[in-house]
Image (cartoon, rainbow, N blue to C red; front, side, top):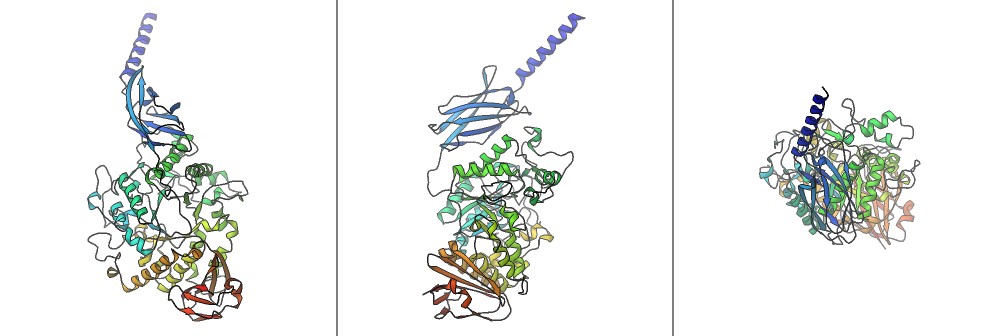
Length: 619
């Protein structure tokens, strides 16, 4: 019996050894796919994925590269390599050998590139800019041949408002002159990364490969060339990123590196979407966890950034895209949803490499103090410091939507604008706030103001002359409409003329209606004037309590003064300027930016009904 037992044990050991030798080792991918010499942070985490890769022993023999640590995780198919790159490391290609029993079982060639030394890259965006938000799938189709691509699950179907329509990088590239002529200076693109999901993937927020442009938009090289082309025309590029979640179709979906790679629940649990719980001093642990750990949607897996490997993976990915493509900025989706300490660490890492870079965070909160919590500051009572350079002004967005639809009274009409701006004391840097009237997640602005072009002009004049950095949503300039309750497809319609068979081409004046041309020309004049006016861009804002239905404010910079009057009533208003003497100073003359009307005496200014007036003052 003992002999039989020994035989069984020996046989088991022999089979185990045989299995280990027979198990094939492969390397399917390494993220990041390459890196750069000369980064200020010399640590690099490589995530290696491949069959049985955990059975191997990685080695690197390259001057300036030190393999500091090899980490095994739960899945047999992953290894994490912590590498230190010395300051004198020379760019080049080197082998990472994966050995088993002292024999090389697999080799991966890894490249250390030379950094781009162009001093004009990564300079960020500021108050001199106007940002144009566009959804790539819905803007312009420059290459119909890539509408349907091999391996991509969802095919193009323009008849489906929530399907893919075929817009791409080539289409955006072909419209850069249009954007330049309009007067915008920066382009924010909804996510371009691969979203290989079965349906409803056009929006880009269910990423399935963080290192790859979706092939229905183009290639990584196409994106790099697009950024270069935009820069050549004086346009900055802002890339949309998401750290809170990824699409459930990511390659690791059936083989997570570790079980807590995602925030897991016993059953599907959706976020409560209550971003305020993160800063709420009285929030329950239950509500906080549901906010931060709950999934955004069934197709969007919630990432656990508390894991060091995941944190490094996301941080390096963002730096990789900045360095690789020459980005000017990042828009970070759902900013309060990931772990806030991770987000602060990420911002520090980005600014360590690119001190002048900008990131604007989507903190969709309705009150100024709640939004201010996320903008870099030293005033949060809990001591939290985000290091975030910019935020979106959702409170002002709500106020803009109401102000020009309401009658003027103590707390209605333009008083809504005054009240929101009067709370800017909660921000450490109010000029770094991005202002907007609508975006890709809500009703179109022209719909919100009952399709009234006079209200449109008032709102656009306000946005382009108040504090902050203005952002407009594609199609706003041609009065596109849409209601969110009808489905997101209704607020993300195709730009007319972006497809060869479109009946009208709104990229040209001939393809626009009279009213669309009126709106386009108004905004074009305003934006191109703003582009060269430092008083509006960087001037000190002084505003006055609205009286008699007119809201008046000034921007002053280096002895240059601009006066703005918004008449939100249905009657002509004659404005006595005595109470503005501190802002008018010794200026006695003025000229209208919009009509070129001149004044030799500023004592009384007559403002037409439901109209803005922007006056450059002079002596």
